[in-house]
Length: 171
Image (tube, rainbow, N blue to C red; front, side):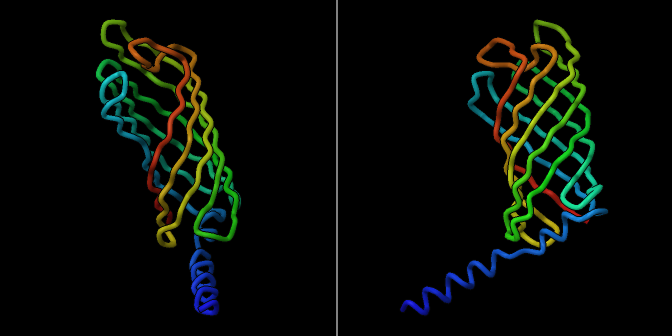
C-alpha cells in the first residue's frame, strides 16, 4: 500500500511540472481578461473588467497595455494604461507574480459629476496553467487614485483593494 501511495504522489508531483515556464520567455505575447462581479456589494452590483495585451520583453518580465471598466449602481469608470509583471518560475503549474500598473481614468458619478484621475496599482497573484498556452489567474489588487473615485458604502474614497479572477492566453 505504501508503494502505491508513493507512486500516486510521484505521479501527482510529476503532473504538476509544466511547460508553462516556456510561455514566460522573451517574445511570448499574452491576451488577458480578468475581473469580478459582486452582486451584493454596499454600492449595489459591482462589475469590474480588465482586458489587456502584453509581451515578455525578457524572460519572466512582461510589459503591456490594459483597459478597464468598473461599474456600480451609481458610478461608472473607464481606464486605459500600462502594466508590468515579474514572474517567478517554480517549475510547476503554479507561477506566482507581482505587478505594477498606471492608468488614466474617467469616472461618471451620478449626482456628483465627472472626475478624471490617475491610478497607481500594485498586484500579487498566481497563474495556473491549464494547458501550455492557457492559464487561470487569481490576484490581489491595491489601487490608489489621485481623486476620490471608488464607491464605498455610499461615499467615495481614493483607494481600493480587491481579489480578481481571470484567464490568460499565450501565443
